[in-house]
Image (tube, rainbow, N blue to C red; front, side):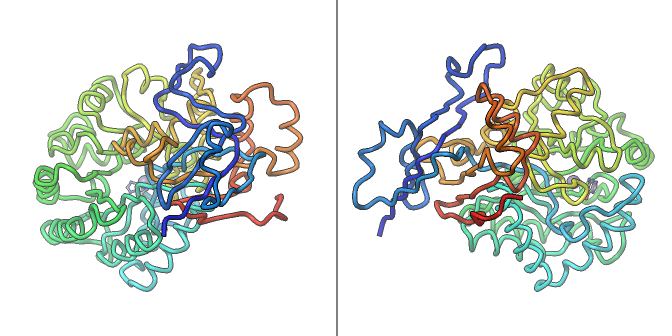
Length: 443
Ligand code: GUN
Ligand code: ZN
């Protein structure tokens, strides 16, 4: 039987990049804000979003009406780079990327060979994403098939839109997480055939980063990428200076780190590159020309001391970029907290990221970069009903600050600077309320 649920709330969604030169969002055709809005969900799809007064025809006896008038609904957040197996080692101290990988990451990932453990971590991880208003993520599993099966089974059972893949790594790492050049490729092919397009699950070919894949394995990636032109690709590039020096010693025939991936045919639409900090103009131009996407991971970059991603240079080069947590090097699952740090990274470089743009980057902007804007990232009818319900007065401080907002931009900016999981009142995914805060929780 078809079920209809209607939510009366403030609504914000995008149908394109906000025009930041305009004085007000009200004249921007890409920004849609309804102070008294209504969103109607038919099973797992949105069938109406707009002014409350225009949608009252939907409010008949078949429809359950939820009154969230003091809340703000926007499309579910998209985290474009995160490692689920690293949930249990978030906040592990290390002076740089490479010792962090060696001392904490690799030993933690070794345990995900065990299916039951991987299932347990997957379930916690997905619940944590939903608690933070994140309804889609681009997820690294480990090199073990079990870790991928456990993740997709958990996500599929909850009808979530997730992208994930088996990490490929056949050198320069402990045996417990090492695959083989051909074995890793064969496992990836089996997994993508099983999961890519099963329900809302999507597969990402996932070589960890150039140092941990042999040339033979990268050749295998090139072939798989060619054969399956529809799948996603994800890896890391130009993150820390020590990492880059190591990459140059391993691949002296390439004059740029990005060029290694280019050589193996891994730059293309739906290929997402974590970090992209130490790029030059040529690298950015290659990213733009191939429609590859950078994942800007500010909490991770601060935490490991990796460097500052330049949103300014990315924009100047017309390179696609999105925001991401990169947990476990990232220190928060919250994309609101991530916006806060992205804003400060930009300020350190004399750049400015308006809150409207950061909300765009975490919703429609990311969906478009991942070529999923016809499914998720906005609230247009026909889209999958994945959205986050934010409480602009979630904490005593937010409530006090809210008395003085003069514009939508100020409210969004307050949420980005002061908000985190406490500001996520509820999360709806696949048309179902999958998280709701207790009314008594104010801190
Ligand atoms: N480079 C290779 N692997 C990783 C990882 O797990 N996290 C981060 N931040 N960088 C990496
Ligand atoms: Zn990462």
